[in-house]
Image (cartoon, rainbow, N blue to C red; front, side):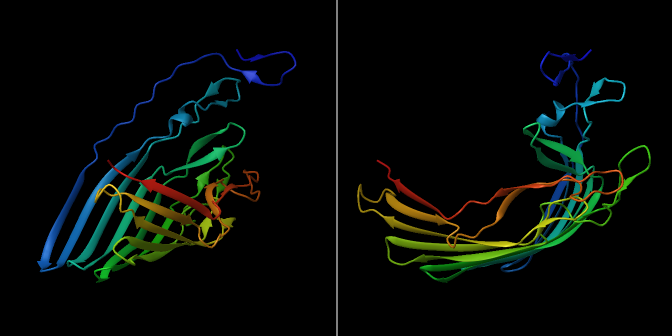
Length: 293
């Protein structure tokens, strides 16, 4: 049975063993078509399987009869299809792709402060579709600009059963946690001189839901990074340089990772549980000196 030592309320369980096996056949097929010079169409279909984190297999819960059992997180399976168009020339590369995904037993991981580990949970079936686009253009021999845009519309397909009483977590049609609907960015590489290069880029990340029922979310943010590299005239032409990187150039305050929860506000059958957030990095400077002999 379980043991509680004097002066402590913690219950310890006796050692136990269990075995988990996850396997599947995962087809993956793709094709590329050349429409004309510089114009291409591509498409692919792939299935995937994601097993629960190893930490989740060591997590146990107490049953009503006093015994313990693994929470039983099921592996996540996916079917992904995409079709895209690519334009490619020596100075210009651009592509846009449409995609759709289906999930079974979608897994969401969240950090558990009491256990001190990230724990997985299944949130049912889900589906999504979206668009990804990016382009790069060498305006001049010394100047390249680039940009990207993504749209992601991914939602859960049904409500989740909470308990034997029939209470449901109202997740049908709710957006994925930690997944912004819109992201975009861009930047440039500028060879100021033969030895000096300046690079800047920015990325906008849209609002992200932090609960499965979408009753709390993190605000959008924009991060700008910059780097300045100077090639050192030592040891000949062997790649020696000094480089200054500045991350989060404008010191934007933002939330990084989210430890999501089912619901931030109490609903029938599920008490409130506040998500936690990791504060994003402040303006950060990094100097690198590199050389090869």
